[in-house]
Length: 120
Image (cartoon, rainbow, N blue to C red; front, top):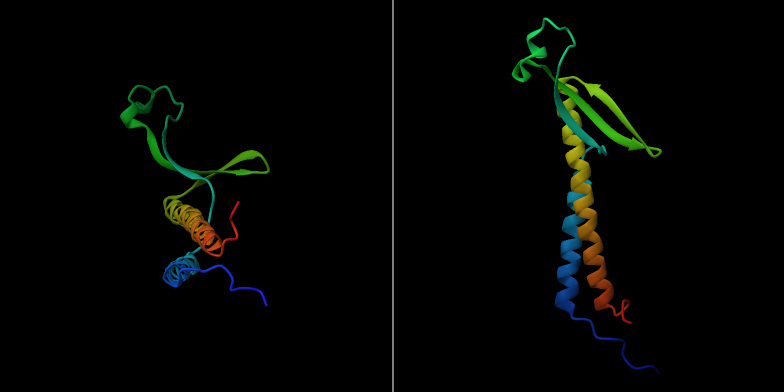
């Protein structure tokens, strides 16, 4: 009969399980996700007689531009203020997703080490 398996500190495993469950709950609460970035731009109109031609503070805008990468190419889209606010929220959700995934991986690695899976 084989001897007992490796000893795992039960408190450490319990803490990992609790942390993992908390992170999964945060993950489940995320809304829609968008990759990319959002820029607010102020632009010159091109008319020589417009104030924006000589005064940077008189430029037109704000104009909102969402940019993202798709198939190795940078894409962009102009948005109105309401669309930009929604886009901003979804981009923040995506960043939160990335943060949560990083933490989930770290907890998983700790559990693997506690189970002596990651021993060299």
